[in-house]
Image (tube, rainbow, N blue to C red; front, side, top):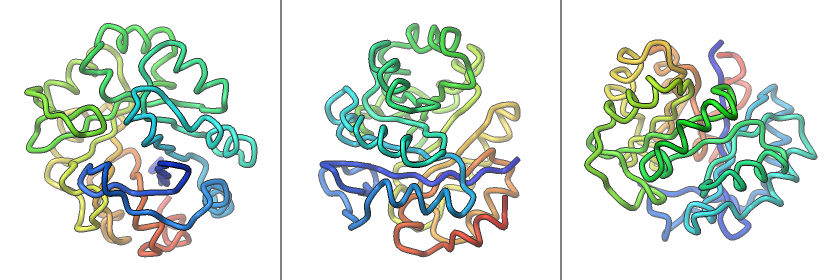
Length: 239
């Protein structure tokens, strides 16, 4: 089944959106995260991606209270990301209501730990985010480039049993100029048994339809929903 997953990013208590990975210059929105989640649920969406920008900056999750409030006031399954570094972080995130969690920087800094989590928490619970520019993985809230090739990085975890992979071309994120369709199609074709979910750049319903045709597992949408560029009822019709 093709899934639509709305994404809510939180920094300093506000709903925000980064542009091209710039965490020091965030677009701020006058929305309540809990009310947004309820709106999405009212339209039949059952999974939410919650990004803790403060957690990514501080190398430890921060916005547990927002996670807890969304989990307590909706029935949505929450996929939490941002700053997860230890078993304690994972346990606390799950305790506060997350159904799933996603790691990014840790896949580079502590690959053995992430591989062990695939076994201990199960491949239905953990996912990885592969954030890149020109096929090179970026970490630390997208601020630091590595020499790691995107496809080599995914392959490593794919062989370890990782099932859910989020792909972001950072140069497209938050600017609504369209996803990197070529890159996404390459990833889907190379890893046909993985659940690939692209993030970043989606500007209208046609972008969503094209991604669906490419064969992605899900699309994750933030700014285009915040700014009403895509109607929720149109998204629901695609599922």
